[in-house]
View 1 (cartoon, helix red, strand yellow):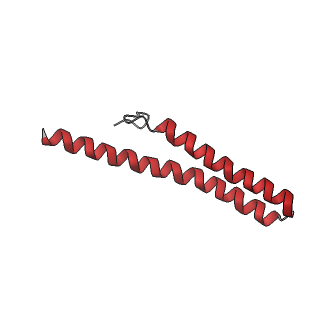
View 2: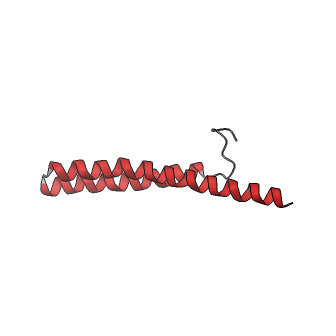
View 3: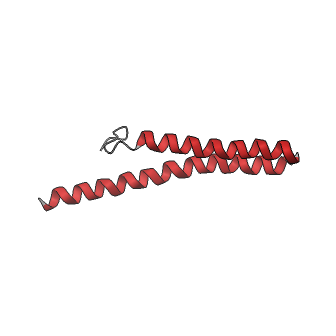
Length: 78
C-alpha cells in the first residue's frame, strides 16, 4: 500500500477531528490566559493542543491498519 493511498477514506475525518479538538484546546488556552494571566496555563494548553492533534492522527493510522488487516484477512479466506 502506498503511503499517500487512503483506502478507507479516513484521512479527511482524522484531519477535521484533529483540527477541531486542537483548536478547542487552543481556545481554552487563550480564554484561560485572558482570565487568569497565567502564562504556564497558556503554554500547557497550547502543548496539549499540539499533542492532541498528533494523537488523533496516530489513532486514525492505527484504525487504518486495523481495517487493512481485516480486509486482507477477508481476502485470504475467500
